[in-house]
Length: 244
Length: 335
Image (tube, rainbow over all chains, first blue to last red; front, side, top):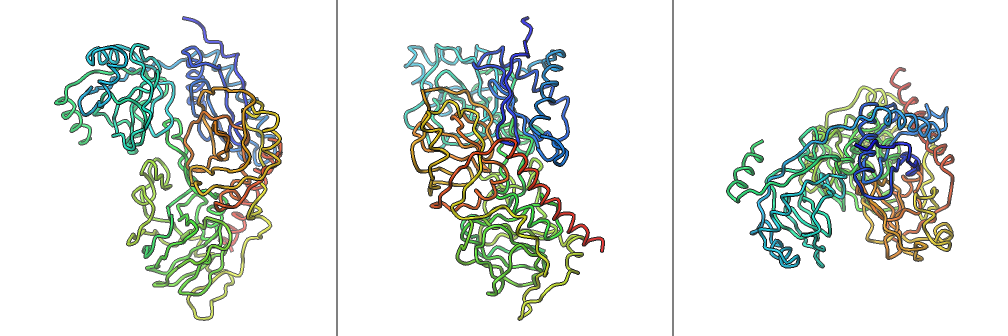
């Protein structure tokens, strides 16, 4: 395995209370691994004044409280934090501890009223609906980040064979759990929102639950597999989810 | 013990300083738009700065107090009255059981904060009382207040009781009492209609055209009616990149000034999404966000550039002012 080179990074201020650490300028697994190593290191080594951190495709943004970091005005908070983060980046690189990715299986009932755009996706890519399902369920997907809406995963790994542009007119209401394709990405709508992705199925799992310790089912760095299920299985799983 | 909502007003929500720690799960911070006013309102009734309060927008609600309460109103002046008598703001107020709080014409600002000593007896969601309308969580059932709501209250805090012993004036007809003591307004942000706000350069500042880089600091922008707790849309000259550029989404924050392709900037406010992919030309400094939060749609803003170092000095100074106020109130508790 290639050793991740954490030396190549850029720091820039996101306003007066956050710093963004950038590890690359394209969406790829090498950059993602650096993001993941540093994010995991920060989780293990929180410091006074750290508010929270947000990993994204190529960046980790560190939100901080300048009042605490400056020790109530004694030091320049940005300079102080930059030094600290550089030390931490060095240590993270040496530790090379990348958390093992979780593999999360997402059961999906494809087609029918759960996936009203499955036929269109098939037609457009000159495939049969069954081939679209097989292709979607065969790939392993990587969750690069959670954003846009509570628990919404940005995932990479969609086969070019089933990539399909978004709808010209977004739907006003997309039910929670809908699985869709938008360009060369696939995703799951965690809560009911408007949206323009082509809907190919629905999962009975609850992707966002404010009462869980981790409200978002998926976290950045997870690997996802979609498992086709029947409508009957969907109903059974859904009842189980609703009970718990 | 509760607040009884007779009329909800335009948009009245429960807010604290926000929901932190969950942005990586796609959950916005939210919280009060004007956190300075929220924090001071809480201090004035002997609460912790982060206690849940009501954020009241432009057209205020009508609220009946089912018990005697210690309250404070800060932020915008929306002509508050108690049983028809004008109320003082930025003060500790003692109001009697059965009295009714109402609002009139908005005189200055956009958002008033109503803090009640002891706060509200409602459940926290993910560590915060803030209402997130988008996710439908927090506050009162994740929604804005409506007529008939009763918000349960916990009761006056020990510091609140100490504040009651301060020299105070009782209004002529006895409906309410206010402390003679009030914080020094010199310590407040410079609340002003059509304000000039200080900002630092955004992460993509250098990607903008030379003329846009000049215009962002020299032109006046109007806050459009399509502005809300999520973002303020600015109308004015068109701001554009030097050349087309696709950005990869990353985290954004309160005060980020981003520019979508059509060229009209958007300032992200308390309910902003956690990530974004539009180029960022500027970032309003934290110390001036309370001023921006009080800008009414239709008013204008000007941006003036400061350095990051200045921004952080101003941040620290504002925290010192709040810490000073907190100490002064704690001292009263020990007298």
